Image (cartoon, rainbow, N blue to C red; front, side, top):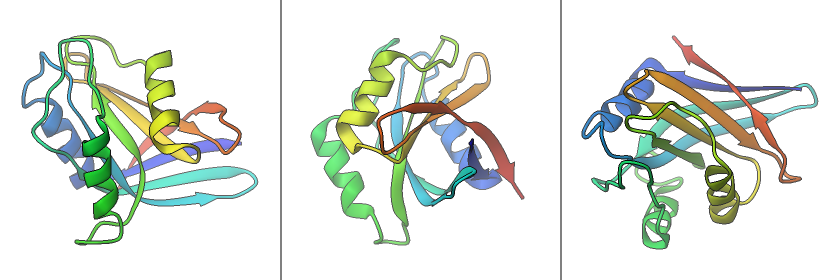
Length: 145
């Protein structure tokens, strides 16, 4: 099974620009789009993001309940599509998915969601798809034209 995350160039740029608002502290937001899950490939098309001007520390960002509720309220309204996951930055650290990242995704959204981590310092972007069985899968991140 393959797992793909596809960003438009515009949305990918918005996400990266958000992480550079303060590249020394972590930030995070939400990914909107569509999931296409078939027997051999799962495609996550990210068509928009939502974030607020909230910053974490140099090594942590929390998706507080009120922030999640506001993001869920945007789903299928105001031009936003389905909420399909989250993203956050790793500031001055390499992009990697920790057990905390995995647990936060599962706790907040359950299954069939993605999370993306971007490192402004290292210009790295990685992602993970959490399936209906709670199993994490690395994704390949693509930019669509």
